[in-house]
Image (cartoon, rainbow, N blue to C red):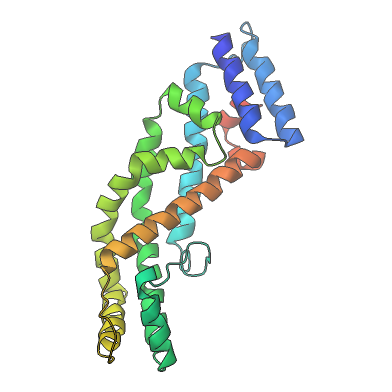
Length: 240
């Protein structure tokens, strides 16, 4: 038991890096854990639960941020652009004064993603609840985005399945389908161009999920680097 806890603390020290105050706090927590006679001794269950709690907090914050107006649209790191195969479409339409149609199509895809984002939370929370002690160790001893990568490996297919119908409804609701059709109908009527018509639902779904994991990775880094991001009763008990 003591060796398991000691290894957990070493893993934490490695993964949280050189933050002096955090290292001090974790060493204090290690002292509690190693002292098996202490009345504040921690169980494996509590250590695992603390990580799950921290991840759940991060997920909730990340999803809440993306669900807000402009959660995607005003974040240059995750804003959904026109598909790569449609770059020529965008360039030609802007060149002939159809830039507003392109802008409307781009904005509407991002609005659909914002509308759909909240549906991801339950899938993530379910995956977090199913973390084993081995998973916890791998995450604690992993890179700064180890939890994000774990969640992507274990939830991506479920997210695509859940997001697609929601994205489709959202695309119709915010007018994305209409704007998309305007853009590509206009383009495909131009002389001497190769017709282009990417799958809007497929594209918007995958880009929305990509953006979701970017935001979750940001929250994970905050949890790892900022002690204030882990303040709950359980996290105080585990981390000191």
